[in-house]
Length: 183
Image (cartoon, rainbow, N blue to C red; front, side, top):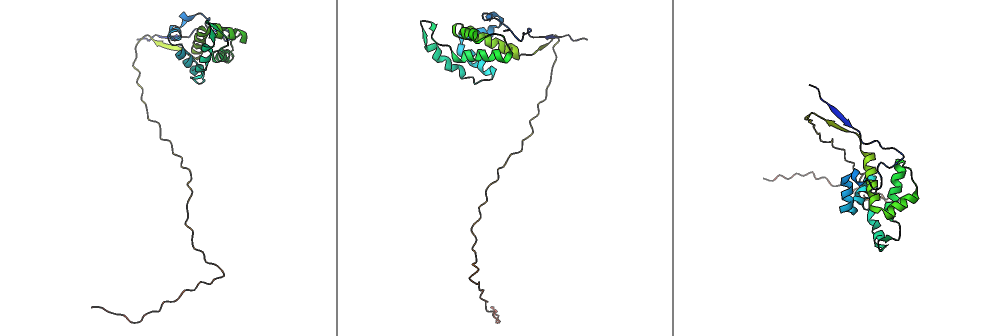
């Protein structure tokens, strides 16, 4: 009774090159389809996966407005900055000039390439078991954390004070010696 376990390593990613080309959309069809059918969703997801604010690509909408007959007038700042950031984080060779050209003239393909790169660099090995096994897990509730109570200021009512220059006199009460009995 042997169990075959196959470990699939992700494709070897060279640390100084992009793992896929700019037009290699067939390498990851979900990313390609998301870029084609809902490009803003791909851009926001990719930016979030990189660790930045996921709404940041919405600033590139100004770039789409400034296109003149399909020719971009300016560089999309978020696409350009994210591409440069991915290159620096993962040690990929290249220069800012090529990043500028890709982000400006091949914007959707550039976003897809960046998304594929982040996805491949973050993924680890996948373990595939050829024989189905049942794995049971027990979850325990986390231990309650002690609450922190900030010290509260105490309010003290003002107390009457005796002045040293005025003597305090206590009048003695007369004691009655007669007792009255009521029947």
